[in-house]
Length: 129
Image (cartoon, rainbow, N blue to C red):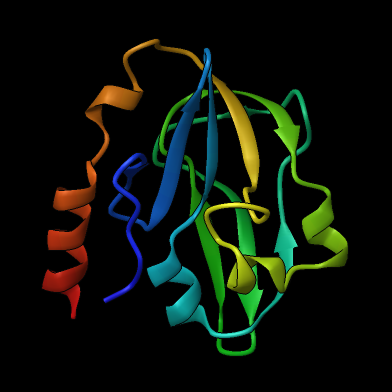
């Protein structure tokens, strides 16, 4: 089974979310990057863009497919990981670290609490297998 850190929250679309003060850091899970294969391109929103919970905010292109990224919460994008433009392979190498994708200031302070914990996400991944 893919690595699932216990200090993050998750979506059923395989994004992870880390709380950092009043902002949330978002990326894709180890399971997602493993399923995609070699990532060759990442398209992300601009700083200042608004994202809506459940709506696409970007794409990840791999040697196998192009997949949309879905926002786990609604809010304003406060930072984008520009390093992924020149080095999209970081998504495969360090999905929970250097390959974070965006930072969001959530519209609702309790949006994070409604996301999956590690055990619920592990059960979701297991049921998809």
